[in-house]
Image (cartoon, rainbow, N blue to C red):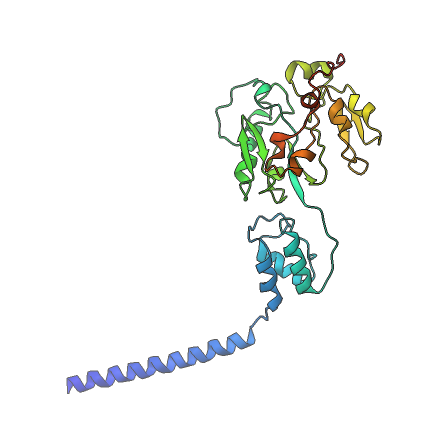
Amino acid sequence: MEMAAIITVAKAAVIIMAALAAVFGLGLAVAAKVFAVDIDPRVERVTDELPGANCSACGFPGCSALAEAIVKGEAPADACPVATPEAIAHICQIMGVNVDERTPVVAIVRCKGGPDVGECIVYDGIRDCRAAMLLTGGILKNCEYACLGLGTCADVCPFDAISMRGGTPYVNEKLCTGCGKCAAACPKNIIELLPIDKHVPVQCLSHDKGKVVNKLCKVGCIACKLCEKSCKKEAIKVIDNLAKIDYNKCVNCGLCVNACPKDVIANFRKARKTGAAVPQAEADYGRKQNPKKKKAPAAV
């Protein structure tokens, strides 16, 4: 009798559990129908075209969030600065829109002093430029405008496009996608993004007077204005002791490069044309092109 009672209770328990499972299952099914969120199939297709780096250079938390924004019309089809032209074209096809073809941008390092700019203090803290900036005010080198050389830009690059050489960051343009994470991370604003068809950058940020620069750095702008005088397009001006290029006027002729006595202005044209991965390391400079060129005029 006891065994029969146990079996009866067990059967009842099984029936009750089955009934509860059926009720909960039905409830979940109804809830799924009631609270279902329709997902536009284009979201997945757009996501597949994005690089998947989730670098947030577009301003959205990740690639899937950007895809949703594009499909909803909250972001343009070419909102991803990292996507290839082919990927952008495919996204445009998915969305049925047209966008103008854009010129890719790459990161440019605006300081080439490196080890030539001596250190004014010995920093033994965390190997991070931002930490050093907070601790020292950003003055590790004799030149207050110089790259700190601790490699934060290389650490944050999701594409391994930056390597440190002698305390100076070098950009591999074959890997650089122009996401801008390195520029955002640099506390000294040493890195900027430029269209890849702009071959002539000024690789100095010092606003010190020429005499001061001459004492501190072998490759710093001394505001001699030879670059300004050489430019036939009036595309380069010396403002506040620093050469500045107006890229709306610059035609990449390289006259300012040849005129610069301090090798501050680079020409990446030839290096890029030959397919160099790191044009920064193979750029043409005035003294390289004209080794017998006269010395710089006296700095003031």
